[in-house]
Length: 481
Image 1 (spheres, rainbow, N blue to C red):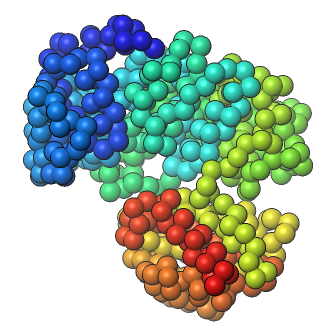
Image 2: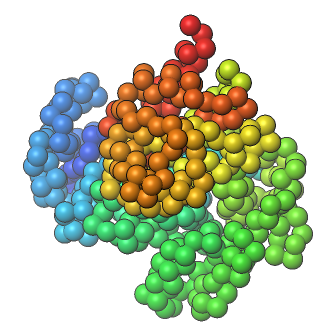
Image 3: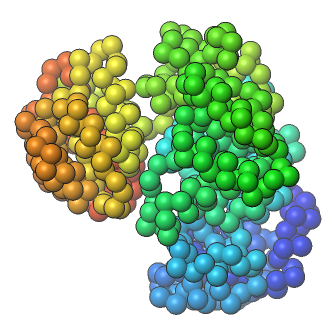
């Protein structure tokens, strides 16, 4: 897309403002700066960030039209501007006035305003990266496609390659959806679990941010998630004149979800059964005995969501289904590390909530080459989410050896102790250099050792990727020395 086409989109937003604040100077803030400076060389831009070090970034050192507001007052400084481009990581839960300000926007908001008709957006507490990449992989059978969003590709960065024929597959976090006023052409809402409660005033506020994905041509939803049902009925009640087209995936019971709610029109369904994804009449659409790389029921349901979304974007099952076998799963999502000393090792570092950990253990237990999960590594940074589901699961399905990591791990251990459900062998440590040798010593031949923390990584690592890489590195090191 050339600059003249971009001016057609952005001039009406930028020129009346006359000056812009970039709220957050990370990857997305830098991306916004690059686009604005290219289109508007003399535009006054103020970079607002808590970190004083952003002033020294090479990107804007020679720019006479850039200014800075750093330190604790950076949000208040940005609030004075007529146009504010917010980065997703900036938390405004204590500034409801700014969250509702017409001056506040974001890359996701502007991209969807201008190009949402060619975009499918994916959100949900868990599974959104996998589903985003699955849709991208499937649609490539028939269309040129671009990836963008929460996986680390700012929406503005794909503008140079974007043409009207492209399908854009965007991963959208709740933080991005907070500022979205125009939904994508097709939205996908996978699930709603407790997550990011440090960023929101309540769990319901988090859920409502996710529901910003709704309102386009169609919404693909998990019919088995009661929270999605509650929020959609609420969405319908405040938009009485709107009809929302739904494509529902899930169990056989989910196939009838929403059929009794006026204004929520179910137009397509895929039913998950142990042997296949089927249409509601039982006709198989994709059989799980066909070659495919997806481990676990949750990933089979992710495939259902991806197929429905890609279909609503113009894809056809005949062209897309043969591509399922060639999909390459993303790292740190039940990633098979290898078989060492007769035991199998799995890296599920993406797991940051109890439900993800439970799904990982259940999925590995069902693998034909694994006898059972004999060692589990859980815990990390504690964000005060409810660990009752995981504690209930471990009491009902004991795992012989468990390593408890960080504040979250210690809280789970304490809850297990109060229920007299402590594992036979256990270690409590924050040090992966200590825990990996212990895990190797306790991993049983034929069984599996699984890193599925059910917690964030920020206590010891930059992100979940770094945590997973460190785990795999140390496992392999144990067998090469």
